[in-house]
Image 1 (cartoon, rainbow, N blue to C red):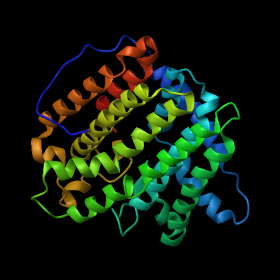
Image 2: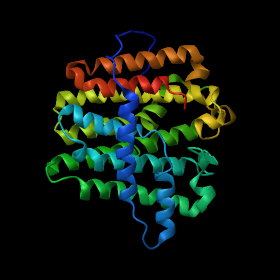
Image 3: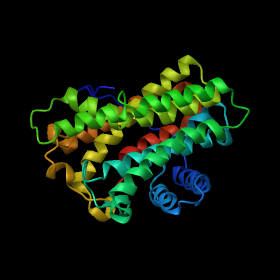
Image 4: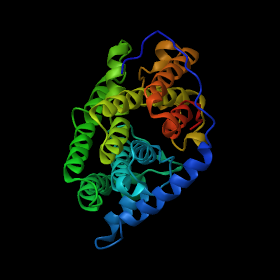
Length: 309
């Protein structure tokens, strides 16, 4: 998805009790994640993996996976292993992103980052362990009523979203762009379409695949998720400027300190908010054919741009 200058409004989604929905889905996800990693020998690595995986957070990614699966006609049970896997992958990316060689942050989700508690060596290995477990979990825990071909598609999608064609590639360009004031909008879009939106896209599309989404449905889900992924990053950029460390649960103002080009630095805060709103409107429009079943995904899209952390 590329941000453009054409603003377009669509109607707000029907009234949906998102707070209750998120609370219930978060509870389900927390239980599943807690059960996904037992503490066995060597205890230190499992403790480190659990420390970051169970540190809280909005759980937007696994909830998106579950919501999409249900919208297409599947069940929570069918998608939960994949939902857990995407949160493991996301947590791995946070652990590694916080390392001194990357963003060098001491706090995440209001707690000391993994390497500040366990050391850089164990933090790297904890991230590696979560990444490996994610793929093992999808392969071994997906219910038998999900055709094997769908599970293989999910594994392939997750691998692509994570690797050089996705998150890793975006991170490389992000690191190379630090301190450069002449970064173009095209480059900024590339960074965040890969570093942020790629995994969000995988969450949504994999949830659909698990439930048997048609190729046409997958295209709609792809466009929806690419739009909300970029909107998510725009709001993150704004919050890095406007929110406090207590609100964010991590160090605020790091983009400015690192001299990173962001959407607000290109457009200003108000225009950036308008662009995010445009992206969410376009995302919700992609789901209109699903009717009331799309209410959770549409509500989550609006939540993404209205959050304060």
